[in-house]
Length: 561
Image 1 (cartoon, rainbow, N blue to C red):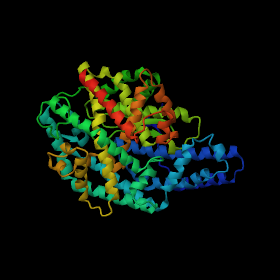
Image 2 (cartoon, rainbow, N blue to C red):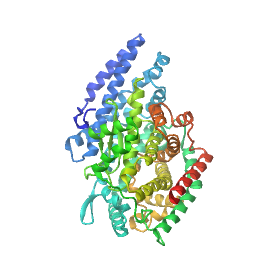
Image 3 (tube, rainbow, N blue to C red):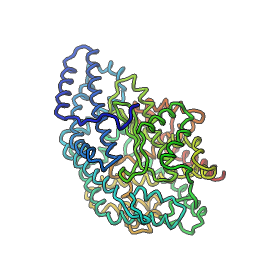
Image 4 (cartoon, rainbow, N blue to C red):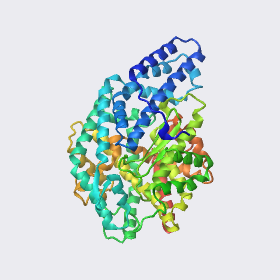
């Protein structure tokens, strides 16, 4: 595995690429021999994957160091031209979708590709190029704002680093950290509201240009939700309210009892008075995790190689993005992890989560060698992709005791299940919030915070949306970068829980099933995959009820032990 920083990057010229694709498409249309036809198809897919890799590489370098002027300029270039590059391949998709060799192509290209190109064609057009550029610029503006430094505890820190103190055992220090973050968001609420308003406006313009009613409808195509709609998602959210909110309300009472407080405040973002403490931090943690991942030889080898060659960068830095993400280099067939440790127990969760994504892509890269795989299949659909991240978090519970003392290890295991349950209402809130703001025809910038507060009450989250002026006026959502950068993604975390629990339960002795499903994850829609591997369907009322009972039992077991 070549070192990440030694990968040769080049800015790909749009006009030259346009000519190259035109020549390849001409060859494709003129050939009457399937062997020649499939050879040209391979050349086009290779070119597409190379373009994707160069774009992703520049984006990763920019996420890892926003002070690097070279890669900032490259991202500016890609923000201008990426949608135009994508549009160059539309005639290719049309040709494959209507090819006289389609039956033979099915032996070389996964069938899900043909479904994806139908959706891709529906959301691609040269008419939206300027609008997409505007959207990308607004997202870049949001990223820069999120990387603003604040003064906390007499030190200059990023918002992400300051949030690392949200689990500190010192209640006063926690309050200072929360107040510092909330003060920042409140002081900048006008800018956050404006950026979101502009994003909603431009995204709805994109959707309408393409013939959709709004961005809500567009998102079903953009996120490749082939076999479910917002009617089913709404039903899922209602079931979370019905079956999980009572558990979450009970857990709030548990929390009060555990902490010994008459009232849990907005800054009491802990369950125990002393939250689990890691024995290792930063690079020491990453090195110690080698032992944790060693229970499976393939997983261990991948982790070690990624760490040694710069494909994992999670060390805290004020030059990096505040979130964690796994990218996949489509030509090199290598996953890349980027993130910003918070110097608390969540760093273990972050690493295992992203390694779940990475190992799934490793498994897929092995399976993909049997086919010609376009970068359109480089990730599974999001609700499927998150099955592997969350199942890896759960699988690793049996292998991370080396990172904690015994008491803190048990606390970590409890918190893992506790957080899975208590995150569900917030995930649903974010999703319904997005559905509302993109559907409201007379939306104003001042509407966001009122709409958020109404939903916070609906999902029993008023306790974390009060106590500070930023929270009391509906500004909690500013910290949810998905709303700005990855609209409608958030609900996929919740949908994936059900498959993740199934994989976890079936991987007690080995992770062979993880590998099997991971290898073909991009080849199926969400419902097709969970049906094929007999996973619980989150759109089934009874399933949601049964899983709520199962998780409560697991939590009870950890609590009593």
